[in-house]
Image (cartoon, rainbow, N blue to C red; front, top):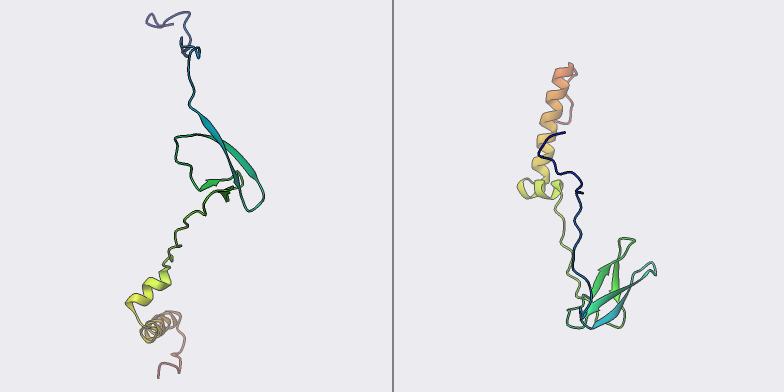
Length: 118
């Protein structure tokens, strides 16, 4: 064993502070209910801003019981690849490009050209 190691010591540390004479802040119990009926009770300081929603253990949002209705932000529309493609090209342009690519594939396979392109 290396000489620099400390014998008789542990890797954990213990606090020498005690909880004697510690004054806790005033608390209030809050209750949240989710869609699945789960009830979550949490202590908050009287001075704290209490959130209108809290994530439940099931993953859904629980609403504060006897609290104001939470402000729900409107859901943002998720742009798909198709939406972004339609911003750059029109449907007739896309059909034309598709037909060109199909003709190239058919030519590689040795197939006869289709009658649609005429």
